[in-house]
Image (cartoon, rainbow, N blue to C red; front, side, top):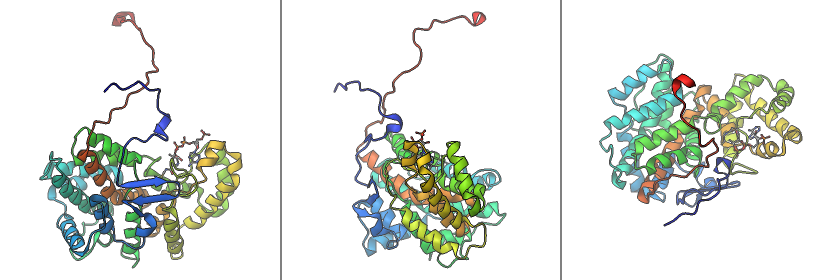
Amino acid sequence: MAVERQKAAPRGLEGVVAAATAICSVSDNFLQYRGYRIEELAGKAEYEEVAFLLLNGDLPNRTELRDFKAELTKHRTLSPFLRGILQEMSETGTGMDVLRTVVSASAAEDPGEGDNSREAEYAKAIRLTAKLPTILATYIRRRRGEQPVPPDPTLGHAANFVKMAGLDANPKAAEILNTCFILQAEHGLNASTFAARIAAATLADMHAAVTAGLGALKGPLHGGATDGTMKMLDEIGTPERVETWVQKAIASKYKFSGFGHRVYKTEDPRAKFLRKFAMDLAKDWKGPKYFEIQERLAAEIARQRPTMSPAAAEKVNVVNVDYYAATTYTFLGIPADLGTSIFAVGRMAGWCAHIMEQHSDNRLIRPESEYTGPTGKRWVPLAER
Ligand SMILES: CC(C)(COP(=O)(O)OP(=O)(O)OC[C@H]1O[C@@H](n2cnc3c(N)ncnc32)[C@H](O)[C@@H]1OP(=O)(O)O)[C@@H](O)C(=O)NCCC(=O)NCCS
């Protein structure tokens, strides 16, 4: 079939529909996973149920959930090979670099490596989903100079992470993180999922595609905004400094982490859940007044919006998922530079579901580019250049 050459797509592919999917739909103030709005799942479901939903198309019944959880339990433990890499990397590697590297390395010992059949990919999705919290928790312990705490077969996904990472000081930590993982589990054709689908569309295997997704998630315009939010709040320091800080930030065209979204124009439907968590957790927090700072910051950005360019003013109208996720995680005792890594733990099920969907009806994703460089140049021998 001859394809007509089109003019260049909008910058950043804004408004371009680049894939068909039955997994998730996202539009302003609207997010649904396989037909369930996020409000139906957050605060009600267990992460395992949502992971099953994303991978299989509907919520599990009791037997399906029991079997799914049993499979996750079977695969939480890390091999000596992966623990060795973690040990080596924990001294200097950042959280996202460690997650990406250990996930990538886990391909080397995966029994289904190179097998892109649905059955093999489903098993790999479970293994990857099961292992990521253990990888992150082991890294957190290593950084503190502690021995890893092995997974507990009696505990579920979020509770296991809490125990392994030593976050049990707050009795609600598992419940809160369970909902956070659900809120972060899936989000349509966001940058990391698109990256994963592009890798998958070459018929590269699930580990390669998830590794691509982890690479894309790291950046501050995507998941990296969670860590960016904490850096920004630390830079501001106190609620009293917010007003002048915002003035200077707008003047220097600073990008406020946790504000703006490509799809949401008025509201990110996940943010309200996270704001509530952050507000409740702030009451027992003894450190810097992060929640007060961020509340004042949001109000001040709204007040000073008229001084921004129209495009920027439109963007900062939306407080996105990362803004209150950052403080929620910090208040739970998670180091401020590891919020993006927590995001990755939640997103694993979504990435795997998209990779399986891509492989189930695959065509190489290979757009063209519009050449803007020079032409007709002639070779000049080295001595004459
Ligand atoms: C999310 C994001 C990447 C979407 O980007 P986008 O749709 O490509 O929008 P653009 O980067 O083209 O921004 C358009 C304008 O708004 C401005 N803008 C966008 N987000 C902004 C923010 N958070 N703070 C200040 N200005 C912002 C841009 O500087 C640009 O201004 P200009 O036209 O005057 O140069 C962007 O809003 C952003 O960088 N946000 C901060 C990082 C973040 O929180 N990411 C997590 C997203 S879930």
